[in-house]
Structures are given as structure tokens and as C-alpha cells.
Image 1: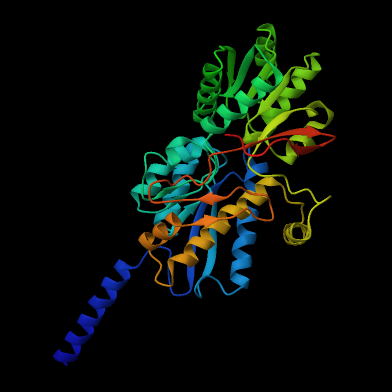
Image 2: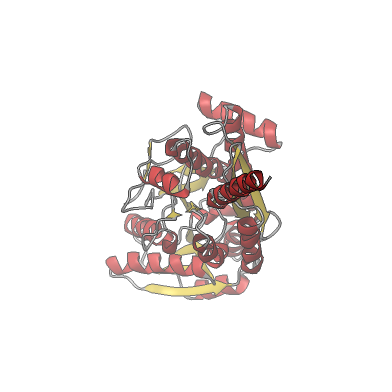
Length: 386
């Protein structure tokens, strides 16, 4: 009996050690991925399609047999665009849900508050919807970004607009947080290269919709071009207020305001608005066959037409699937990140840029494109600007 007891004790210790050494979020049957979104707050109109796009890509992968026989499970926490709630959500996903990685966390304030928790817990922090430079630099084995950083693409977009249109008095309306400050740096960098000053800048608190005082201040500064570091609702509010008071100044919004909801909510008021596009909006009219089929499937699955945020959600999940597949059946964080560092994807049916990562560079893309709202839809004006 003592021998048998010792055998069971040894087996128990072996099993315990194996369980302790097991990669969090990875079992023989599934891979668990976490995401912090806004499903109920001021940018829920972005968070919901991002979530749905990710779900659709994971469901597509699961329908095809999963990744090396494992099904993908997405656990989404709603932080309502609130950094304090996001910290609680991150802790839950790490400790209770034991997720393997965090994918596409939404919003710069949320990302800045939670990213240290994620990487300190040894989880990959992947493709957050916050093109903040700290999401990929300094180089860190667990941080990867696929979205062009605010500073880089707003530098290029601002320079292109000022040079093409001959503006002399550029101004900025920005959200008073890390997002707005990153855009400010990009705009100031562009103007410095053109030997022009930033004539005026004014901020607003996150979630504000009455921007009348800010617009009045910029108009008084006689701006002939206004850059908007806003999200969808604030973009509509700013442009509508300017048009209401008869100020038809040209405006350029970051990729955070490049969405079908902008022209759906703004209507005629936002006609002519310029925006930075990461990829084209998936309009059904004129879509090629593969894209039209994808749009139909999305509509059938979620009961709504997809938008560019749906596509980006699908895209980030697709990169995860590709890297997990390339990592092989013995999935660990080290194998996954090594696979991601050698990943190169071509342009796809959505018109996405090529994404390329390496051991020395965890930023997959640095460029954006210019677009403009014409006749109630976004029209791409340029290729990727450098």
C-alpha cells in the first residue's frame, strides 16, 4: 500500500508540475483570447463592430477545424472607455479567465492603463486600437502593433494636405488625453518641416459633444485648416457646429473618426470632410465578389452591415490565427511571438496594407491613406502616404 501511495503521490506531483507549466489559455481543446472593448460607453459604436469582426474570424477558423485542432474562444470585457474599469477587466481576464493573449484592446486611455498589467503577466499585447508609440516601442517581446502610429500618419497626412492645398493657418482640436497629445506631436512635426507654426489648438474632455466654444475659438484664430483628433461623435459635433455658424473651413480627422457612422450621423454637414484611412470602408455597392460574400455573411451573422471597424476587427483576429497556426501544435508564448516576428501578409480582399513584422520591428505598418466624404460615403484619394 505504501508503494502504491508513493506512486500516486509522484504521479500527482508530476501532474501538478505539468499543470503549473502549462501555457495560460491553452489546452488540448482551445485557445482563450481576451479583449477589452467599449460596448456601452461613448465609443461603443466602434467597440461593437470590432468585437463582431473578431468573433466572425474566430468562428471561421473554428468552422475549418480550429488551429491545430484547438478551437478559439474570445472573452470580451466591456470597460465603457473607462481606464479604471479597464484595469479591473484586465485583472479578470488574466486571473480568472487565464487568457493566452490580449487582442485589440480599444482606446488609448484604456490601453495606457492596462498594457503594463498585461505584459507584466507575461501575456502578448497584440494590435491594440491605439496607434500610440508605446504600444510597440521600445521593443518588447510581448508588444505588437499593426496600426500606423498617430504621429507618423498625421505627420504625413498634414504635410500632404498643407502642401497640396496651400494652407497657411493650420489649427488643431484634440481630445485631452494621450490620444490627442500623440496627434498634436504629429501635426507639430509636419508643420515644423514646412516652416509653419500651429496657429491655434484647443482641447475637449473625452466624451464631450458640445464643442461650440472650441469651434468659436478656432474660428476667431482665422484657421484655414483644422485637424481633428476626435472620435466619431465628437467629429460630427465639431464639423456640424462649424457649418452651423457658417464656417466652411477644411477639416481632417484621424483614423479614429474615419467610419461610416461619421457620415451616417453627420449627414450633409460632414460632406467634404477629409480623413485618414487605414483601409477602405467595405461598402456593398461596387464590392468585388469575395468582399460581397463576406459582407453578406457578416450581415446574416450580426443583423447589421459591416463597417471599417468590423473589417479591422476581422483583420486583427486573422493575424492572430495566422501566427498561432505558424507557431505549431505546441503553442507557447515564445513560439507564438517568434512566429509573429516572421509573419508577412499581402494585401487582402479588404484593401488592407501589407503587414510585416521582424525580431527588430514589432510595428506591422506605418502608413495611412487620405480619404474624403463625397455624396455620403468615404472615397479614397491617395495610396499610403510616407
